[in-house]
Amino acid sequence: MNLLGRGVGLATVCKSATRSLSTEYSHAVIGAGVVGLAIAAELSKVESNNILLLEKNDSFGLETSSHNSEVIHAGLYYPQNSLKSRLCIEGKNIIYQELDPLKTGVNWIKCGKWIVAQTDYEDSFVEKLYHSCKEKLGIDVEILTSAEAKRKERFVRVERSALSSPSTGIIDSHSLMEYLLSIIETNDGEVVYGAEVVGLRHNPRNGYSVMVRDHFGDSEELMDMAVDNVVNAAGLYADKVCNMLLPQERRMKQYYAKGNYFKLSSGGFPGVHRLIYPVPPKNGKSLGTHLTIDMNYEIKFGPDLEYVESLTDYSVNEANIPLAYEAISTYYPYLEPEDLEAAYSGIRPKLAGPKDKSFKDFYIKEEDGFPGFVNLLGIESPGLTSSLAIGKYVRNIYHGK
Image (cartoon, rainbow, N blue to C red):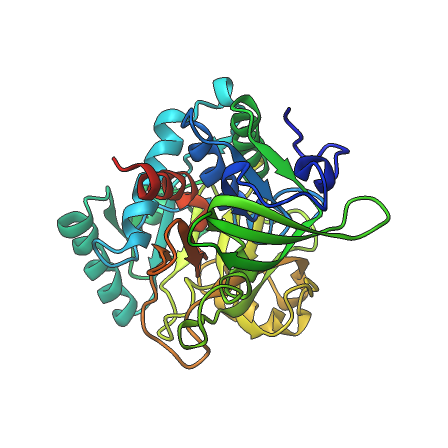
């Protein structure tokens, strides 16, 4: 029976809230964002597996997965052999090579991207990034002079140079998640919404006990479920989930960065045909407030970055418009601050705190001493691009290559 959260409560999946513990599922995947869906889809392809995907919200992908730029990243910025680099490039290739929009319903556009340099420092950054992409990462890029850029995008200011990345694109994240859900459904996986994990316990002889609060319907119930393996893909809440299981000295912490997005308050502004990024800020926290487009080539700007405590406050901080304008006007000089208005915001989990400038890779591993418990933390950008590759990566942890 395939439930997919369509009017079926967790008690139906568990058969009985008072049943004795017995392992009914090979894997419980916690979190139905794009990464959790991709992992569940991959694991469901193994015939011997019986997959349960638990999501505390009323539907899939309501948090980080649906509050982002929807960029297919090329993998330009990340250190060679890091998970972010490897999985981003692999994920990008899977999208372009395997997800034919006409066959899968996953909508994407390979529109390309520029990183634009206006100063000597930025020009030097672009040159170094070019050599890194060519010599270390194997990513197709080219450098355009200011004059060449002007001929291609007459409304974009490029004072010194632009690094062109033709393999960058945009994707309709909802269509990707619908596609992954269809794979899970085809392979008889079960997805249950309104199912919040509130406890984890390792049973050395019998896998894991997962305590779930069922929000289905008008009542709340606590269910204790037994599974062989657990995948923690809880996104913003991943540290809280893993800390239910890990001993005190190994507990993890994520930080939360809100990104505000802005749009043009009226029409009539010059159009742009690709994504335009500034050189990343020297603080290393983000890629800068960039110009991106949606599937209809409508322009939006963002995200900026501010560390926050709330994981549920998606209000856009309009006080950031002057700073956003300052960044945007360096490469798109046709607007005034009053031409920008709030669009939406997203919150992403980070392993680096506000004062930490070091590179933090994706954290994806089977935890020592907890066989079968795969823990994912800090899955921020390029998480959407990497999601399909992350699914395969986690499958290989369990089933090898």
